[in-house]
Length: 221
Image (tube, rainbow, N blue to C red; front, side):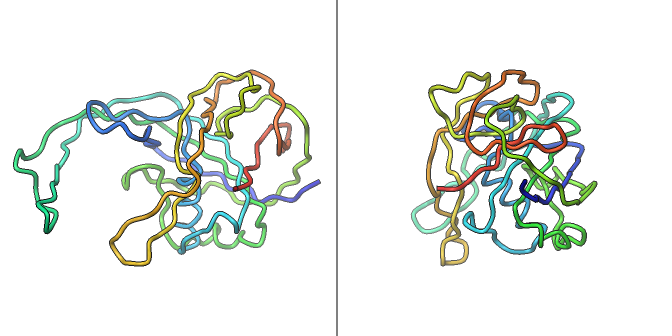
């Protein structure tokens, strides 16, 4: 048996965007990425969480998908500085998930108080996609060889027979030393984003059962 920390989040909207879609509609993935999950955890702890600190599992679901119309403020670089684009703003359609529910499992049970009294306000996507922490508790997880896995993301393997969306994304990001210089991607990998309504039983590494629910505990490369 393995003891994990279970944190349940809920919200009104979420925007786990599909990366590299730069024009037209903004489309959502079935699930958030692991870098986003690290961001949610780090927001609650009030610091940057490095991947080697914790192994993470999660389950994500939502009621429906909505579409909103937003104004986009375009920028351009003139060789010296970033400024407003000469063509001004434009409008675009943005997908979002309605009534999202996110449960995260961590192998850091000593972080329990950080979620009972979080430093920051977590969000899932854009700044307005706020999350509320519904419960924090320690649970027992039993390792299994196979189970019905849904509402999460797993590294792609050709022998896995499950419905989902293939995406190539960074496993995590590292903050650059200079303030304002952005982040550097770490370990670009192909993942399978499995929707919450998937019903296919799969055999995979690092599967556990928690209260009869199958979860995948991600280990970082």
